[in-house]
Length: 225
Length: 284
Image 1 (cartoon, each protein chain N blue to C red):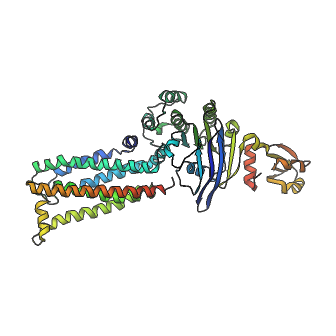
Image 2: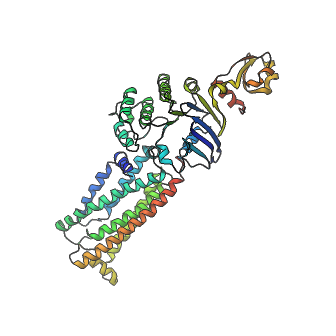
Image 3: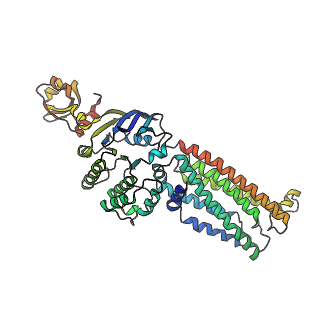
């Protein structure tokens, strides 16, 4: 797997990944939708897949002593590394946002809940993009359109939820969410609930990605190169 | 000892079936895999390595079934599909550095010597190489991990005659020590005349013949005669072409004594392929 990951990083990593990861700096824009920068990473992953298709990467890989299963797994590790790297970048940005801009943001605040929400953004992307891509091994554009649609449905749903949490008529649990989840945590209680929320989202991300990986392997086994 | 055994390899597509392909290749020999475009050469090679799923059959390399031992067996194989057409913007040294990590038997000294022999500059990008140089680069990668079996799909198709001749010399030198074998597909029959020891002929997804070159050629004869003679000979001809002075055709050697008066000549590979594709049945 290490050798395959080396191959991914050396031959399949599109340079736009670095540019789009720098979009973590968008967390310093006042009143911005902070769930959006992760979508740019999804976009960069699409570029890498597109580049792999143009470079006949699947054929090169499968002529090495590697099976289709390992080839798909290595792509998943590669994608997961890029996604987690973005979330790691979110951590210092979150503190900088708090130090420079302070609370509150019109949309979801730069706080641990945001990282949880971003885990789900990537889970949605992984669930749609790769299993549909591996049905053909070549049609990355179609898979990206489908996954982009799904990601934006999730972003609007999540951001919409926290917007509605702040209206006067919102039910109690929404008001509780606005008060404890959509805020840079200052109390031990807020830190606790936000970290638990993030951990649950991370677990969902891991589970969805694993199920998606199995589906992709199953789909790719049927593809004739 | 057989280095490669293919038995009953089957793949069904709508409109085309690779129908129970079977042949074997001994260590130390070159086998030419011939057939028209679309006869099933590439499909056979891809199915052998699992690049496309098969609907039946077995492929054994050095006695081991490739299914279930894919990684171990691929370490002993070098598979080249035409010219090297991957990562066109990457430098050769980057691709080599990635490739070598997958092979325990990678030989840096051998790689350097092949680069020198093929006049390949490691600092060039794939896109900067000519078609011939790309085939040579793919060959250098395959030979540097000490592949015992080279499977080459139309490696000479895009090359000029000088480069083709050069490459065929390389093939001969690769098998010289008797430890390696080459299976290569082509529709350039003159390449086979120059370097193949065995021929496997595929036609519409069926293996029609698989034997050594001399036996292959000795099974057939070219005949020619007048239009009147054609009428008498027609039913024994595998295929024929009429021209202003009569006809030229292909017969099975055992039919030669029955066709008195016709001019007869040994058949070359190209004629065998052309005449049999024209009319039909090569099963001898």
